[in-house]
View 1 (cartoon, one colour):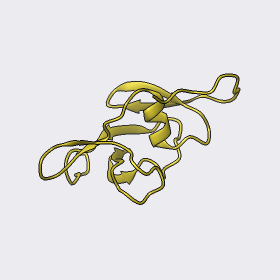
View 2 (cartoon, helix red, strand yellow; view 1 turned 120 degrees about the vertical axis):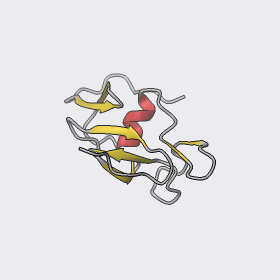
View 3 (cartoon, rainbow, N blue to C red; view 1 turned 60 degrees about the vertical axis):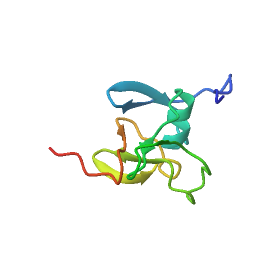
Length: 99
């Protein structure tokens, strides 16, 4: 459903989603980078475990919550992608990753 536009040159950012290397472009949100990589389930609901993914892409719905660099409850649609970022699917209410 989502695809990159061709012919755009620029720096490539390297991100990790649950150990899988992804690429993003400067200016991409984390949500845009994940969607472009074919990932559409970002979290599960606390009560039923149902998968959720981005809905509004403007920070109003909270369906795109992910864990970024160990911090849960980050709205992927509002966080700019950054080189070296480690992203994980959030299960339920989200708990910080243990070191």
